[in-house]
Length: 386
Image (cartoon, rainbow, N blue to C red):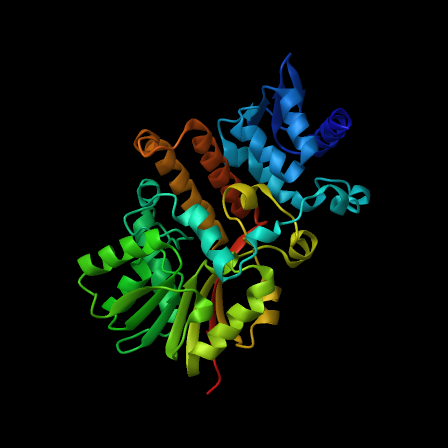
């Protein structure tokens, strides 16, 4: 069965790349793909292992084969972008009906219950503050930036993004702001500098420790506090709520709970600034129960939304929106470059060569998703009726 599945995977892969603007090379001078001399190159160096992994579980095996060194590319995001552009049609439509027979479903122990969410977050965000500090910019912001025309500085673009969310939420002096998902504290600091009174929630102990330190160093501890608390346990009422790329960790079964919390915690006339990564709605419907490489290695329990899914789950109307999809591609390119440049330092924290390849694939995979338009990220403004 393993050999048969590997052969089927090889046939499907060869058919998929036939029309892609890439060059796929194999040992012995074999070449596939429709790419010319200037096209990105994917080098399969161990084809037997590559197709065995692809046949065992395509959505996980493709990334695992890169981690294992079965294939390489000097320009990973360039190679992956054509695949991402044709994500919905890489497998011939008549064969897509068999998806449920071969794809794994997300494991029940990664459900985002209160305890499960804490464990899922711990597996990624508590890896090491030093790791994140060595590929993020000085603001320690781990989400899409918003570049102004002609601006190349990532930290400046991150501050612009945060200001955009705070503006959508109507944050000003005296505003009682709830932040759901602290990160490492930059949004709380910028809101406090506007004179807002900030309560920020996180379930990452590592993030809270560094956010507390950064808030104190910024001199705004009297205005901003970080609580180690799940959003479902939040109490009180607020004039504004901000949440930046936290909703992806909520999980589909808890979307109504999340949006219900926004409505419950917001005063009449209050506003929400939400930043969310999205995918096309038809792809959400087709893949929402799939277990992917990203789930296994990076974001257990994660689930992207679509804009229609947000609209159908929220009783608060969207009153403002902007897309930052291409800005996210630029952001990820910055992160990838910094990660590579600082790898020797990162390795000193105990991360090995396989982790390096895993992180390279994660960053390149995501950059390709946004460059291709398969993924997008939206800043959305909501308002509660008075």
